[in-house]
Image (cartoon, rainbow, N blue to C red; front, side, top):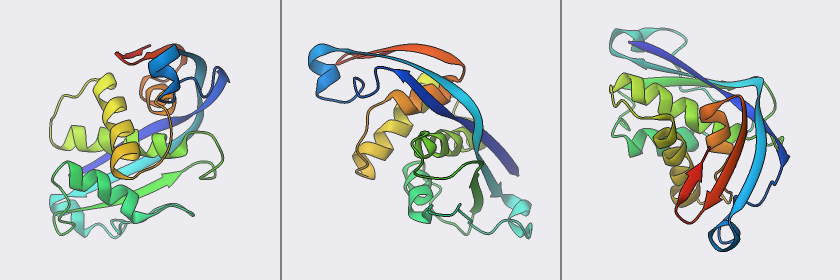
Length: 165
């Protein structure tokens, strides 16, 4: 099976930084952002599609395979003899457009489809944030993951009890 998932990058318009703990846990936070038409693309190859010549565990320039492996390991598909992937981004990684969140959401989206997990957008966004921040030790708030999971133009409120989009 070959599954293609995409997720947009985002631009923050207002309130950037108010989504980061401990600030949002104490004072709450509010951001306005929008998804843009630069996307992360993630293709997951399984089964007979493993023999596709394009299935080569590739990542974009400045990307790391370990980033993808953290997600595949979390979902129990870390044996790369059973799956392979291609990951790309339309823009430049580390440009401040939420490219890691975009990649994380696309990866989880593909795994969600492959394993028929039926995760909601909220669950996908939260899992993407959790793996990035707690497993990979990347500093950041939740705005990026929620913005790219939901797409469009959003007002988001952050507090210690959760995220309201």
